[in-house]
Image (tube, rainbow over all chains, first blue to last red; front, top):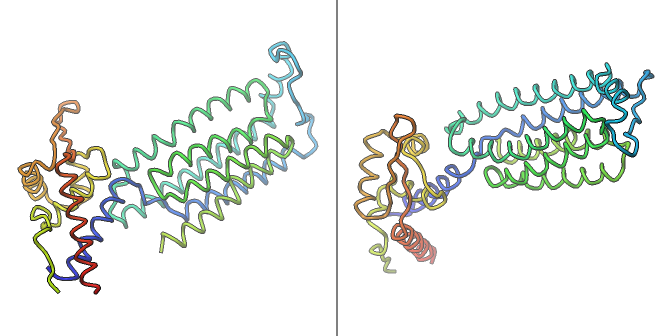
Length: 219
Length: 100
């Protein structure tokens, strides 16, 4: 047995340990694209919210039972403003998912890693648990008029999903998750700046992180 | 400088077997199809290497059914884990010696 065989053995042990337990085909580029979509969405939302409209956005449920003012919040929840905002939100989500899927499947092919294999399933399940929990919670709370929680809750649940997912993909994702959680707490502490924090968390951070990941792993 | 190759495990001389053990060291268990995809080898090649590891009692086999399809899962045995760790230590020693 000579030197090169030893080196190859070690390299293959390392690669198999990593590739069998982690989904390493996540594309950094898709993070950058998701960030750009989020910033576009936030800009559109800003225009809708702060343009003069007959619906004020500083609405907060009064103390007491929100059900008692059902007339008020029902009108608000189903107002054109909220529907437009929801439309933008789902548009951004859809665009980010489609781009992410396309770029990731391209990278998986290059790596020879199955797009729908053991590791990607574990990763998706790990992320889906906090994301679906957060998603349902936020939709229910929106329908009750608690608009103030949208930004902090989105950021917090997304951050938790990333921290959990870091065990199944690049460990670096953990730090992105922690940054999102810090932003979530700041957004909760500073009501009224939700959109700004949302744009930083989903837009700016994704672009920075996507670029770092792209430079580190995609070349 | 005398290099001791005897400490290396003969069972891991084959690259595929070494890779199978690497995978089973970091995963609780792994199924046949996923192993095949990851290692990019033929059914026959994988099966014969798994058989060899089974003969050494390095792996434990769990057979079950998913619907009507047979699903075979493989797990590293304590003996196999120890053998792999010893093999890694031997590799480390060899590399250290060669550096001198």
